[in-house]
Length: 134
Image (cartoon, rainbow, N blue to C red; front, top):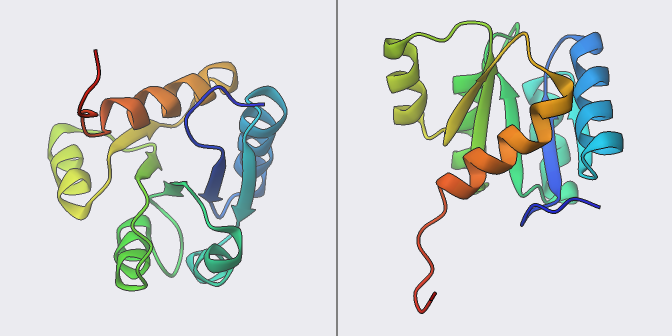
């Protein structure tokens, strides 16, 4: 089981091989409960029943890209943290992704053995400080 303070990850990527690797890396190796979707439309339909605690969204998908999908999630009331997954990371893109509401960005290609730790670290770094902590 995952040691992270969250367990349900909704992953959206149009590439079947990436979905398979992420599901293996986060599910089997990381102990997360991962639901993989191949499109924004599929993810929007699946989210209410799955109740994700984290969204891992590919930026470059046909039809609805990652930014549009995150906007649709927010309009639907899904306010959980989101991380964008992309091969294109430069400073101006990172600013745009943050402005859109992403808590972080991971680059492709990625190391499957480190993926669970990376998303947990991003999630933890973006949680508000808990009052009364010693």
